Amino acid sequence: LCDYILGVKFHITGDMISCSEPALIIMNHRTRLDWLFFWNALYKMNPWLLTTEKISLKKPLKSIPGAGWAMQCAAYLFLERNYKNDAHTIDDMITYYKDLGRHYQFDI
Image (cartoon, rainbow, N blue to C red; front, side, top):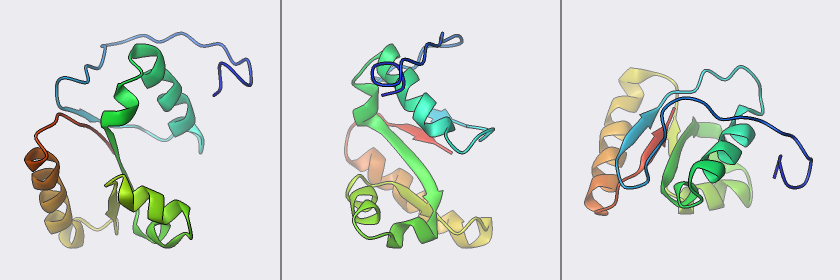
């Protein structure tokens, strides 16, 4: 989107992410739109990465009409941002992803 519609040019450096291997990707959220640039980077590395990426989000986003439903259908992880409360949810979702028999890239 950034590259093709808005004409934003960027260069990707660092380790390549493989859609055939599980990965944990930790983002530092330097901007509110870092996810948009990250999706573009994934697409440039391998378009299939967009189908294997799983995102963690704040739990209230789950309730957004339309978008919240779509994120739930995509099996994104919704967190309260309190490890004591979220530990069980994280464990359940990682088990769920593993049981699907595919490798996912998990973004936090």
